[in-house]
Image (cartoon, rainbow, N blue to C red; front, side, top):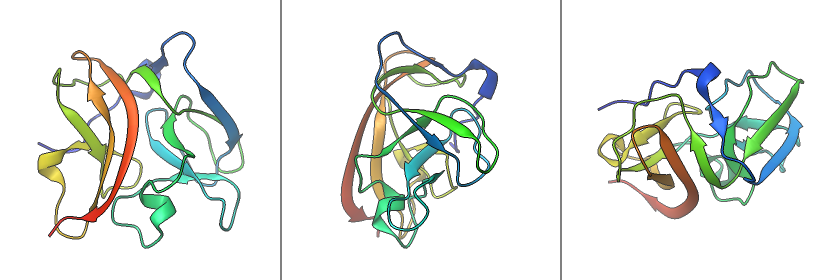
Length: 141
């Protein structure tokens, strides 16, 4: 398998899910995995499983999935937990992880050497992901 192909126009949060707002520090598409860069910019950046900074790999409570597309320095809304319709084809019951492609999601089989395991959630159906971020601190061999 490969990174999920997400249709940005179809990304929708479930009612009552927790969100955070801020400023985009990069070009972000709805459905991208993002983190709040508290160390340098104070803006939402694309998360990356093989980034040098642990914060960018998911070692933060400020990580989630963008609900809207945003250009640099534009407002972005991020869903940090709960159910999200991703606009992608998921396999129900499958766990999805942060990819080494910045901002993307992938199944565990696509985690390769040097990538850190950051669980983003489990698929509740073929279209809905239950976001429950868990950073392992462990890199694949």
